[in-house]
Amino acid sequence: MVIPNNKHIEFYEWQIQVLEDEWERYAKSPMRILMQEKRLFVGRIWGVQEEQGNVILRFKAGIVPRMKQPYLLCLVGSDAPQDSSNWNFNYTTFRSHNHLDFLEGIQIFIPNTTSNQTIQIGPI
Image 1 (tube, rainbow, N blue to C red):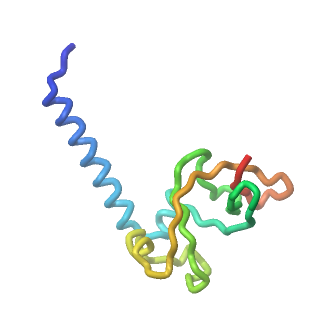
Image 2 (image 1 turned 45 degrees about the horizontal axis):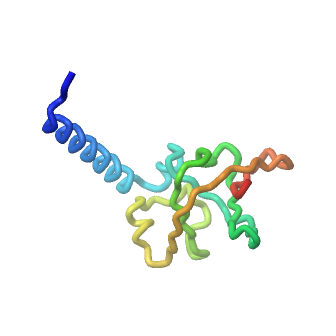
């Protein structure tokens, strides 16, 4: 079956529109809702491995990102509300805030076998 080029173009234009609509819904969603739906994760910096140039992040067990997926790592300053479940602002507001720094990266999981409460993320 031969599909004409214009049908391919229509399909890809539709796919791009779907992705843009999905991103807009995500960006307008409140942070606490994204966390409840496990579409956004909040962890703590647990340590640094200077030799490898890695940062180790710590998340509560059951609230960790999927393995080997690209994520945007956002560092939140000490002036941020301590309880992230009360963050009522949306993702766009979070990303546009003047006191935040952003780094992109991919995390690799290392289970913390000494604790059932946390999982550490860092290099293998």
